[in-house]
Length: 318
Image (cartoon, rainbow, N blue to C red; front, top):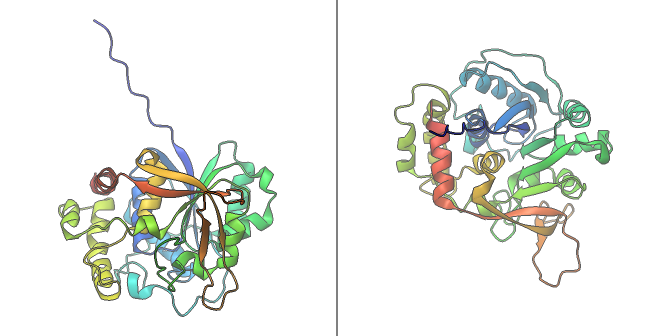
């Protein structure tokens, strides 16, 4: 009788997460920690949904809540004034649905750009950077290094809006809008970049019935989803007139660990940094006769049923 071949464990991607948690940021981190395909090597906080220092506190809250035993390296972005139009109305005063989770432990945090630069230039294993915040920290990292020395497999950016309205202005997506100069620098850096725009993340809606997947969760990612999503739903109903939620950053995290359900295309993309009413607009050249050389990959679609089932299953599994 032939022996059954044993399944090889999935190859782990070494992931650096730059975030401004944030409800969907928190669930994106939870998804990665529920995924054997990913090894979260570092987490850095950026100004965006809330100030970087407050985001840093939320990182430690989440690591404790999720029971993470192998602590990643942690960094905090440089201190600069957060715009008055942050996203606390969507995510809560504390960024986590006004839950004020306890900070179970707090390790020291390095400057984010310094930490990221040291990792990407010293690692033997290519790293994936998941950028789910304004791109200030990633741009600051690039200012510190020679791109040819960076062992970066890919930078996955949740950001931009090409053929749909923005969520910060009529034409600008939140993450890009809050630091368009950084976004332009990263997108045109020459490093492999994949953009997950609002065109994609707003096309998948998670409704109340989907929340049933977490109804019996008593710990970990499922419990986190159960306590954060009702607040997020109410915010979407009030501000977006939507009876459901968009999990923007979770979809970007899913691209890291489940790329086979997505489709992408090569394209030229740039960011408007100076327009009086178009600041932060991401521009893509879709013309078949375009003379411009493609510089990024753009997610253009996904298997909706497979992606939703994957996200719900991963977040609810024990």
